[in-house]
Length: 184
Image (tube, rainbow, N blue to C red; front, top):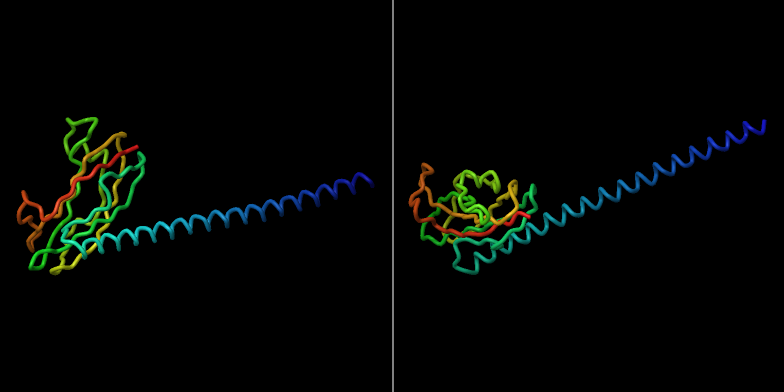
């Protein structure tokens, strides 16, 4: 009889331990989910602040193109979202396309632009945009650091296009900026 009572106590203790473990696990998961939600909200807020800062920079100055940095450091295999700002300083409507490409690798200067696309790639809206006179707008670009570690020179060009999407002056962009992508 005494043996059965001991095994009943052991069973009740096991049930209590399992219940406590599930409660602690649930609380831990709720905490982690809350942290990720907070990080996502903070990231979105920071990106919106940068976007507004870029637009304010364009509105108060005579720049045609605003870009937040000269060097971007990205871990190998990761991606980074950036925003650029474009302002129409012409006396007429501006129709343009954004062109972004890596043009050179510091470690491998012999690589062609096609070879560089395997190491640093860009995802953005390639359609034509329109801005009215003195208007400014911010546009998003995702930079993927898929390749070898090192520093890559990137050229960002704003090309004026006609109604058919053809570049008006292929050798003379509306605005242009070079920056570095450092894959670490």
